[in-house]
Length: 116
Length: 113
Image (cartoon, rainbow over the protein chains, first blue to last red):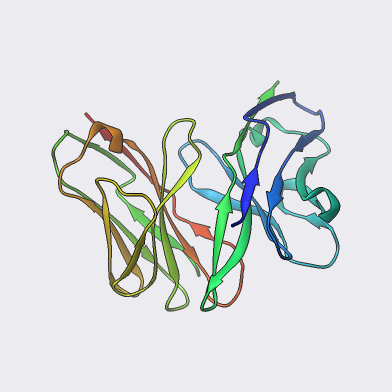
């Protein structure tokens, strides 16, 4: 079965600083990988996804993520954080659950705080 | 549009009262539908998922049940709420035959008092 680990429960960065959120996955085949963001009291919004091809994926809001198969990682990055990026971030791996259905397994999330 | 509608947005219910949360989705037919719960500091907990009308899979035995009476309608219910049922409930849809990830609703904040 697939699994996702987000080692950092809470990260605090200063506005304008760079950001990297870590994600490690476990899956026997080529993974489908996702990053979602959740603002307080809101649903989850898709930031970016990786299926195949270029291992550096660009997403919305200036985020990018790099797939590294050798490290089983899919870390999320942003060169300069804005105060509005304060939210909770979830990494997920998707797998075929049979009959053409896909199921996502989520990490426990990383809460990002931004200091002005 | 693949919009998901969830209501109500906020709910305060006494212990022992019943619960019904509704989720309806727009867009392509025969979606996979999911109910998740977030309790403080516990991430996303998958409660139920459905691959079709009347088909419900339960991931966690608990005080809740789910039903799918129509293709684009998914309902989360309880006959008697417990304090531990408090949390943020999210409905999500997946896409058959393609792994585009999930689309999430805006959630329902349930407080059991």
